[in-house]
Image (cartoon, rainbow, N blue to C red):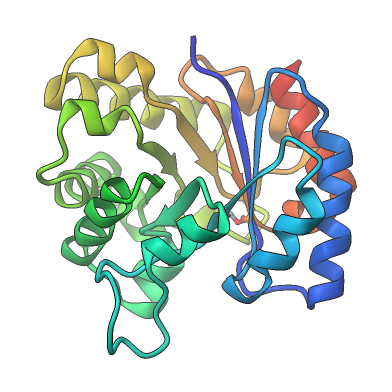
Length: 251
Ligand code: 13P
């Protein structure tokens, strides 16, 4: 039985006081039900957010990490730095890093190995562009992202990985994939994991949906058999809407 995970990706938003307020609100809303709750603030707010959620069950994660251990890598953050603060998760391969910053599968794969070696749980994001969906290439694209990003990852290691399907055309656009569209890709991703590893791994890996998840559509998405939670952007920036999504996942 896969435990739902509701993760808030705060992206490059909020000032420190706002991040702390939001974290407190999420902490209060998280309760101790059957849903894992995670927030991923920007690096500079990690420490403050940790303090704000310390008496709750909310986990804190990074939005990215670099694969080298330490050294002359200006602007980067290491796995050890995230672990040292207490991070449990790290988002990798987000579409904004792929499509805005220009990250490729090889780099994401290096980061994923570094995260696993440090004991961080990677949330590996995959998803197609609108033109790729419209030309019927969705599965080809996500399969190639999975293959490239997971190269050399063993079945045991895969048990620590969370996958997030985020169709790029649904991110920040208000356009959500329908439950049918999302479920179809999630089921295909699970089949892909069964082929690549085995059925036990496929049955155990949590696959989150992301892309304009909001209180109004969360329940129908979470009701799909292969959707195990959500990676939420905009609606994670308000405690009440994020709380409603957590509630939808626990229903
Ligand atoms: P939105 O929920 O704002 O569409 O963002 C989704 C996302 O990119 C989460 O990582």
